[in-house]
Image (cartoon, rainbow, N blue to C red; front, side, top):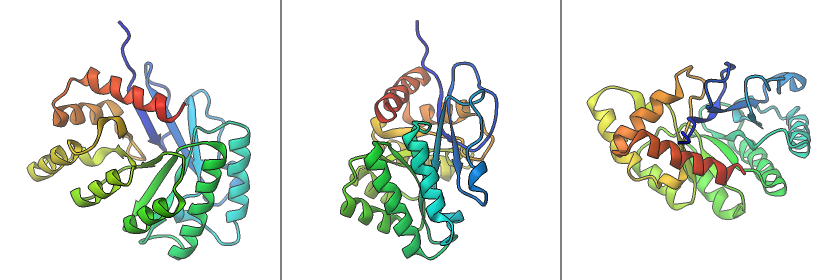
Length: 231
């Protein structure tokens, strides 16, 4: 009997491979463009790269886009990201939107999904999706917001990736996440550890409980999602 792997679609943690798990390393632009993508093959089968809104620099972003395009041409990354919009940190929002849209164009050109960081800019993000009508799939990473925003994202066609937010033990949080995760189409769901250092299996277990399905059924579904989106 084949057992489906646990799949972590977004982590910043360099750590050895575990069992047959699939772990996707995210690397992004900070200050030194030449060191942004490490030689991490012994740890990770898959990697993503993007221009994160926190680290955008009006004097350097073009170098970052060139690096991104080179990685796409060399087929070294399976997705663009994380990239996106953040109203609490980073340069002015208009500049963030401009660079995000440039990355969407590259995603369309090279047919790669996009892993998105978004803080308090969901309306703008949804408007960009309506305007750009990207042919590629957009994944909201580390979703941790309310039910209304979740419904808007689902209706707009976004995939949703959940992380450690669903692990908080208090009763209200557990109730809220049970409601929210059951709104999400299972075929558009992923899980991640981001920068937490948490074990991806713990996140899967909590999600399976909230969804009232077996852990293996959940793993099988996420594997199908991964193969479809990142093929």
